[in-house]
Image (cartoon, rainbow, N blue to C red; front, side, top):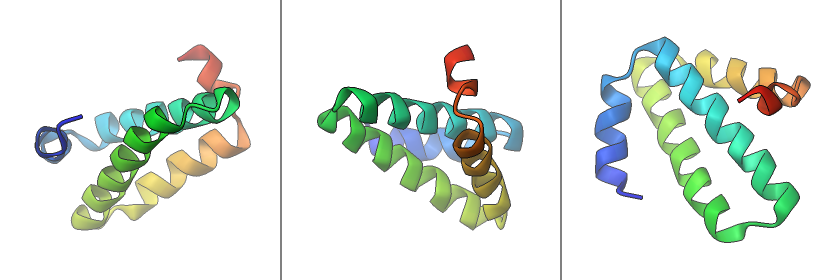
Length: 81
């Protein structure tokens, strides 16, 4: 994973795209946890940290929190992804 490229991509994403991206990362994290994929989990965690940092930079931490709440309370949405 190229962190600089991901950071630049996140900066250009709309709020809707950012929300979809964080949900995909959260779903990947859940999937990896069930399979025990530690190496991939590290990349997903980095991506989640970068998304949160981007949300904080924009002052929209609620977007990250809402995505986390959505996936946490309704993990079956990951099955549709």
